Length: 352
Image (cartoon, rainbow, N blue to C red; front, side, top):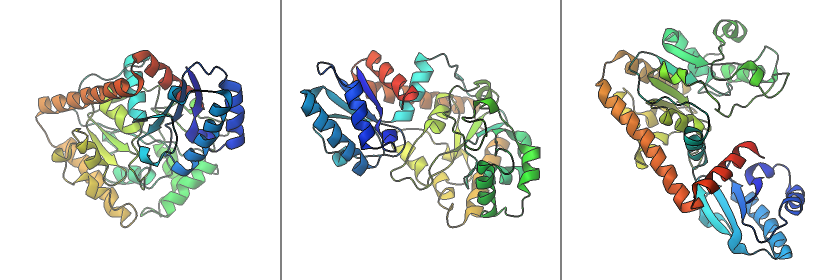
């Protein structure tokens, strides 16, 4: 199995580098070639330029197009791809979560825990639905109900300045971020030593490995999904890791994400909340204060109202099982075998 790496990342390196990779890696034309455009949002124009380079190289070495398999994520319509290869669509991060759940040494929570604790793993803090959302939660006296991870880096660092800019453009511009960070910084999901450079001016956490006890100690996740303006909607490990850990969730992210998940058959917990989640997420760029307040209203309402706990456990189990079913269907359709799936996903995770 020959795998060149993630084409959505190679885009930034350039077509010349792609040609060099082809010359180095793709030598045996009798083997199947696996290509992936599976990380980040896919630009069909850039992808088609790359596929043209790959096609010319395949012709040069006499490769059979029937042995070239292209796997793309769900941000691109396969009709927009112009090539003669086998094309497969994959919800990448759902597949990655399934891989960690079943084929890696990563523990997952196996049941719903009824309590008044909320898990909020913020990730990159310089977003309107991250640091300002934490501020709103704390101002609403909900900090004692939170297990959260928030790290804006040190004052003066590049990340801190981006967070400061976000706060100053938010409804909380009067917050003293330096003092706020001294009081409220917490690192639960990723160690400071795991940041990708020594100066701590930028970082990206893949979501794995994670501390399973964070899910076991809490009853619901507040999920700040990645891109507020993603079109089509972009699902990452943040939502799928929550589902796989038997957690209900409240979404702070793109408007329409809850209905998008419902269309796939997932329970989105809106009947247990006070505000419709898609409505709450429709205000990020028009009335962010209202959006933040509605999301926190949902958090406050969920943890302070008693529900049929057994029913929640059954629904959480249903979601986790449905994730497994959907990925198993993807494996059968795209990879035909578990071993090919495992090899592909492993290389997607750990290669360019």
